[in-house]
Length: 99
Image (cartoon, rainbow, N blue to C red; front, side, top):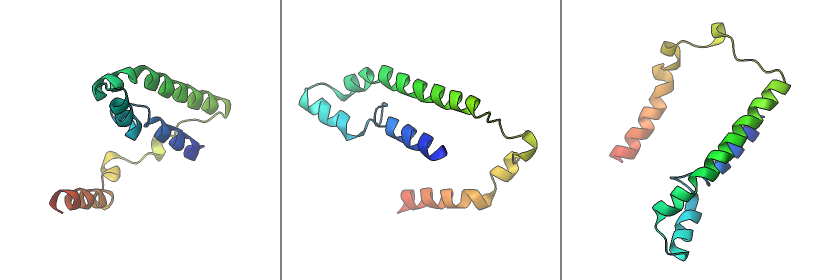
């Protein structure tokens, strides 16, 4: 189920401002409208799309009787923000910034 949720959410990013993929820029060029106006017009469909995705995931989780992870099994913030996990992210940003 996680892969399906991720793929649907990623597909929705093509509909949601400000990203909207290349289609929004092509549409802005073809209909001679500013990109901001096209992005504004896409807000309501994007909210409806993600609302439907949220409700679908919620009702499937209820039907499958999925429960949240118990607090005792969750890592602490100190464990979650361990340098071991942050080092690759910091290295990637440093590589992007400093070339």
